[in-house]
Amino acid sequence: MSSSPEHVIDVTGVTKTFSGRKVVDAIDLQVTRGEIYGFLGPNGSGKTTFIRMLCGLLTPDAGSGTCLGHDVRTGQRAIKREVGYMTQKFSYYEDLTIRENLDFVARIYDVPDRAATVEKSLERLGLQHRRHQLAGQLSGGWKQRLALAACLIHQPRLLLLDEPTAGVDPKARRDFWEELHRLAAEGLTVLITTHYMDEAERCHRLAYIAYGRLLARGTVSEVVATARLTTWSVTGPEIRGIAERLRDRAGVDQVVPFGTSLHVSGHDAAQLELAIAAVREPRHEWVRINSGLEDVFISLMDQAKDNFS
Image (cartoon, rainbow, N blue to C red; front, side, top):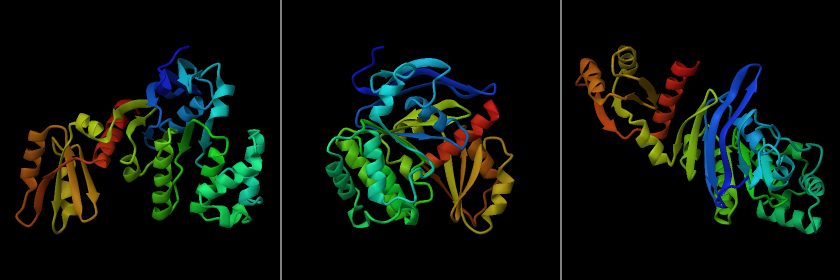
């Protein structure tokens, strides 16, 4: 099967069913070399199942395509050799040191000049001063660094990262993303799932999946523009009461608290303004704002629930 030389991932109609339910439903996805591609969606939406099909751990029930030029159905062994997969849960040996864990992974992949490769990996991820520390004694951020180093030890061409920053502090998350962009600049391709909107905005492109179906994709600006969502921000006293008065009005698709304000959004701008006019009071300040990625994804989630649940 041929694939575009630019496409590290190029799949069409990929589907997986468990117990009669389509967990991944006819997904098409193309990811180019050196791209950081965000794969977003609520828990249970099919993200992890899709990733496992890409890296050769599961076989699609339907659909076709390639990952790193290898057929996703018949080339699973080859794919596994060229992919680094970081799971949601820390999956390395907690009773081994950082260095011992990296050496073990390097042995599995039969990495040439293993000792030097492990030392280089320790230095790149800033782990050299902790090399003798047991993995089980590490904080979430340091476990994350170890997991990333292990994923990179065999020099993969594609990283598949499944919610790698869950439970990690903001400083560690920022450092992690800086490293991802350095790797992408060197030509490594990254497909990453995340629930953090600030992380989604750091991706070159992204896709949103719910109930196994791909609902939106493109750059952040393209996804926001395609949603055609109008949003107003309201601030002032007792705004919770405004939320209750607005929720069931025609034109109001969502009312979401954002700190001390509310974001009120809808797809029919004229109807939305009529709904707002009915509850507007001088003590509250209403400002029309650009819809953000979080506004759009909440809207997509609500639509998916209505259409597919």
